[in-house]
Image (cartoon, rainbow, N blue to C red; front, side, top):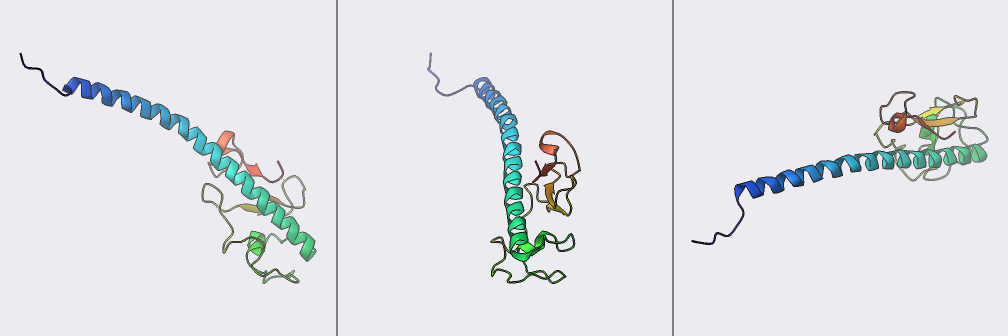
Length: 142
């Protein structure tokens, strides 16, 4: 009797099924990690933007208006109140105001929803106000 080398079709199919199951488990576990990373990234970016808005207030004597929005952090305002001694390069090192982790613009409210001087927020993964988990709003007031 000859000794055959290699794998049978059944052995190859069993190995593929096992690899597929393991891949599915890893994908499910990583999807939560990616969502958590997006929430943390957006939270950090909102905190940074809020710090720059506060710096703008200290240097210019007023918060950016609703109409001016966060654009004043990258471009000198062209509508009143105008900025005095606007820093060369703006308040953030970017040509555009960054987007949240879901590629949507941040919302700038003046005053904030809780009667704070201002609020910067993202509506989370679903892009709608409210929600829970990764769909929850992310704000500098939290």
